Length: 527
Image (cartoon, rainbow, N blue to C red; front, side):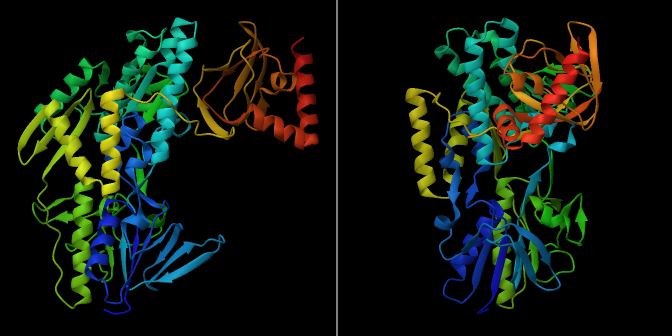
């Protein structure tokens, strides 16, 4: 046992619990425990929606690993590859070079990565809910939409600013929809020009009921209470396309919305995709004791693994309580291996399920007892408060919740982007990318598809395609748009903000000259 090195890849529920149990049980026995995680903190995902909704401050759900795991070597390098035969982990070191670290026991607890590309346009136009940064960015965006709506003189545009679409009716989708609805509607009293019916929050789910993990009566209660609070619940609806205007569904209908939040779409971590081991839909297959098939010293737990629960012989669901219990039991199995003892299969009887649905209401199923409403909400807060990984975070969350009950949600928000970025956007055939008379804010380069440059209502000046660009004339002359640009086909474009465009065009004189010539040619063509 002395001198053994145990490497854990992933700092979520499963990985952190495994590291904690190993550190405590093997203290003073000469074992080295190393945990790799991109961020230096563990994210308490069940409360991310509360951060997005302004109920909690971001640091309440981010527990620093070094403070949580004394005695464990915490590393934030990206794991690039795993050599099972050579018993090494390949990672990108501080100098951007690949380095290796040998292990005696390896625990894979990588979880899954967000994959917004499952729905065309979603990666370009939707917010994800995976990290603390995602939640902070969404909260800031919601407040910005309220500020825009407050000063907007166009009633239709004001309502569009205040239209929010959440895709996915699982735990994350329901909780995010409830929090955004609460944040927008509870903040309305501080705005003079926003009416109650200006705000629309739409929850789209592909199945016939929300929250498939809980009982049918609680599902019905969830949908009913969310509708009563002002959320539009759209069931049996599958998103087919996301654009800057909203969501197009498989049946051809469209839901308009200025803000899209996507809580569906995951894929295995990149490092696991390279592993040539048995998998099921990208997840690692394991033996009953959570070792990989045909492996003696490589273990897999959490969302990245298919772990059979010996309690009911069913695959473990990808939830926090199962991941945490797997982390504890795999740690005990590793200790058994180091001591030459027989390992035990994973066995866990789930305690229950909880989900907050907004408006100080929740649904819960605890030890066979079903609860809903305010009592379930109080229980939800107490249980998750005690599940936070450290007392410092419990005190922070308690203070934030108490503050909110007395003073309401904080309307202040920080700008998360310090500079304009180069990004991508997707437009559907027929979409107006910008209209004649609009202020000049962006420069566009076409990657896929074609657009039409239109003067007036019907005069098509030009049709341009991949490799071409548009939007430079108004930016160079600091004037409003002098033509409308409309997507002729589905279009993918690179979008460059005004300040980035100005910096590049000023620094690269030949580029500016090319753009000026292109602007002059188009001006002559339009005469």
